Image (cartoon, rainbow, N blue to C red; front, top):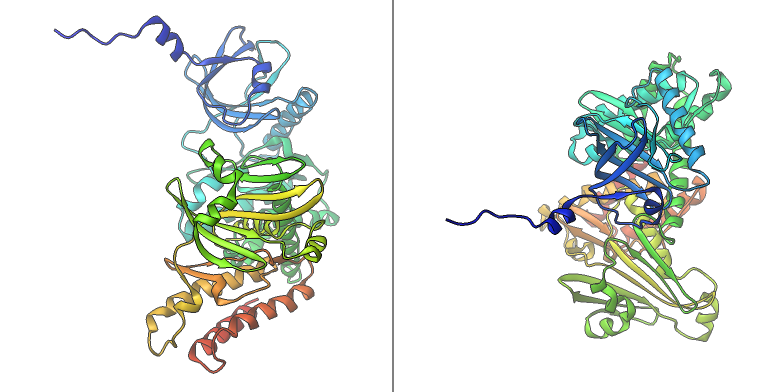
Length: 502
């Protein structure tokens, strides 16, 4: 008879989740994994919370996780880690949740105060809602009708908050929890009271609404009118025709601010970016992609360019496709042509840095581009030299080749028209000009258009300046085909319809 499997005492001890104190949590870097335990001194001394899922972890600042109590109750705990700010943020979080509850805004139930075993570190605990997920988590899984329905439900909830004289200053899809038809608002730390609502506060409330609406790609902009009507109805406001253009203008400003913020964020260490700087080198890299296996490529990209398949070998840039660790990648090296070119570029942001920032910005406005993986700059202190941009290889066919013949000979290739006009519409909504809208910079792949060559891309805050450059982009795109060809006529008509639809 076969002996049953047994677990040695040593292995059994290894399977017991680690117990963290506040000092150990403050030392934990990114990658903190559950399960682990937190011992409490209050409300019941010695009670242990079993943390099963890490929802968010900002090392040294904040930890949010799903946990269970010995009685089986599931809750969400938020722990502020910064020693000097922890008490202030904890108080602000509890006060914000209390404000939401008093205003009648659905939010997870606030549980009695809890303190870690040291007796000095408080944590905020709320009841977990079974099956609930954030709006951001649900969004990719919904169809168009579901997206619009839940977006308007969130807008009505925002209107209820504003009607109570309050505002959510960190308003984004991750702070709305969806459970069936119910919508809950999260993050009391960002809830503020403005006092009695008055007409002079209308603009501030509309700015807050605009900040929420621009969290989605411009394809949802055609719901703006319905969102405003839902907001006005919930507030009990009389509809005003001038309010809609005001909201659209505020959305453009909020979107510009959001894009700029993202561009600045991806050049320093953050949740998804790892950045290193020395006197001779700067590197920013996708944190999930940054592994020991990638070190040889990151340390010497020139060697891999020489061995790769050459796609372009010019004075200003060298581009090569490589195969590395079961990945197909493209490395673009921005060259220094001569001494004069070096002097002109050494104190300016490198073209590689501009392309890196722009690639991350485009993701916020629903524009496909090859996923950026790493940026490397050669430096001597503050002076920049060559730069390398590593990104995923984008399969597909260049639009110049896809539409090299007129549609009279191949009508099936008209399938690229819709995604191309959508791309131009998104650029228009975000007030972004590409700067070199050649058909060779557009790749057709599986029913979508992917935009490449991003170092000349710019975003504009002021509409008149953007209009001039956007018109040049459209003209440059049309010049890829003979003026009187069927392709050019159809594309010219489609681009005109975008302008008329504003």
